[in-house]
Length: 440
Image 1 (cartoon, rainbow, N blue to C red):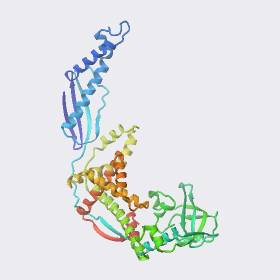
Image 2: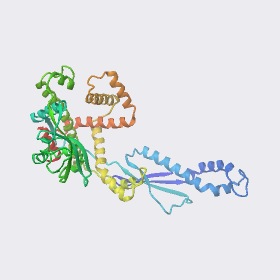
Image 3: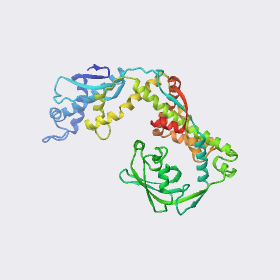
Image 4: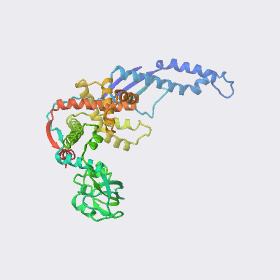
C-alpha cells in the first residue's frame, strides 16, 4: 500500500491511498473459505457449492468489506504516525466511477488541519477590570426588602404608593404571561401613578419602554429574554390579583439570627456591612465573568488565522443523528465558528501558560461550589463528611466532571488573563457596571 499527504493549503490536505491486491487478498480468501460450508446455490447441497460459484456470488461484497477494513486501519495509523492535528474527521471523496476490479484501488480523504498561529496575551488592549461596590442606595434598598420579606403583609382595598401588588403581566404578541409580586415604587413614576386607586381585578396597561429604572428588570418581572430586553417597546397588561401593604419587620436580634445565624450580626451597622460584603462578593463574580468575556472577544478579534471552513461545512453534514443539508450546515458553521476559534485560542493559551487540570483541582473546585450552594439553602456549617459525600457523588458523573473541568479551566485562564492582559482597573457602582456591561 502507498499512502501520502497532498497539501492544498495551510489547513486543507488530501490523504491519498493506493491499495493493491496483496493488501487484502489473504483476508478475502479466508472469508471465502469460511463462507463455503454455509453457501447455498440452487442445484447444489449446502456445503457442496463449488468455490468459483461461491466467489462469484459473494466475492465482490467480501472484497469491498475487507478493502474498507484495510483502508480504515491504514488511515487511522497514518493520522497517528504523522501526528496530524485534525479538525473534524477525514471525509472520503466520492467517486461515482470507482472501479472495484482495477489492479490498484485509489482512495482519497479530505482532512482539515488545526491552524498554526501564535497569541499575544500581553498585547495592548482597552480591557477594563471592574471593581463593583455596593453603594448606600443599594444597601438601604436591600435592608428594606428584608424588612418587607420578614414583615407582615396587610391586605389593602385599593393601591397606594407603598403597596405591593401580586398579578400577571401579559402580552399575546410577545408571548408574555408571567405572574409576579412587585412594589408600586419599582415602576417609573408615570407607570406607578396608573396603579394608584386601582382594586383587585382591575387591569392596568403600561408600556415596557422605560417601565423600570433598569430595563433588565423586564427579565425578572416579565420573563423577557435577554436578547429582547434592549429597546423593547410594547404595551403589557397587568391584572391585579392581590394588594398588600407591609408592616416592616423590626430590625432586632431575632431577625439577625434568623438571617445569618446566632450572634453573627448584632446591629443595623453589622447588617449593612454583611449585605455589602455579600453583594460585593457576588458582584466580583459577575465582574470576573465580564472580564473573561472581554478578553475572549479581544483575543478572537486580534488573533488571525484561517480555518478549513469549506471542509468543516461538509463535515457538519455527516455528523450527528440528523444529517444536515448544505444550507443547514452553512448556518450551523456560522453559529459555531466563533466558539471554535476561541476553543483553539484557549488551548494555545493553556499550552503557553502550562495550565494543567489535576484531580485535586477538580475536587477543590467542586467542594467550594457545593459549600456555596449549601449556604444559599441555609446550611452554613455542613460537616466535611457531608460535603465530601456530595463531592464524591458529583465526580462519579462523567457529564458533571466534563462541565466542572471546563469551569476549572475558565477559572485558571482568568487568573492568567488578569496577570498577562494587564487590564485597567476601574471602581464602579453596580448601576454603572450594568451600564458598562450592556452599553447603556
